[in-house]
Length: 98
Image (tube, rainbow, N blue to C red; front, side, top):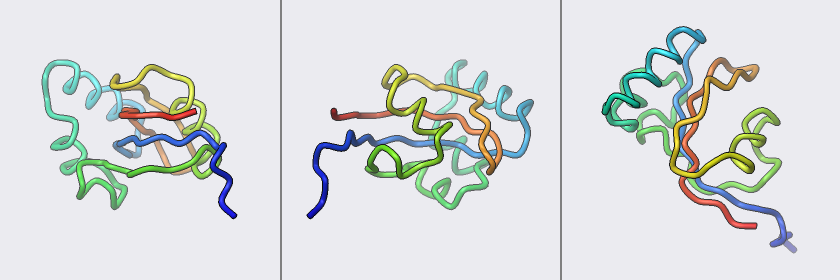
């Protein structure tokens, strides 16, 4: 039986190799660029094709650095750079349940 008490979230992200590129993309988004279009153009993750959309996932399904942001930081705001073993991420949490 699935544990329904685990917090769940929806988020999108952009994955790049360098912190500098991550900072540059974050500035572009803050200056009005579309997150989804930036994800399609630059993200190294297959989710980039879908504008960085990761769909819904439960706490503990992603790497710890990712989970920390997704389940604690402000919704609908671009967070990052967040460094993981995969590279540097910009994250936008679009919804969260307790």
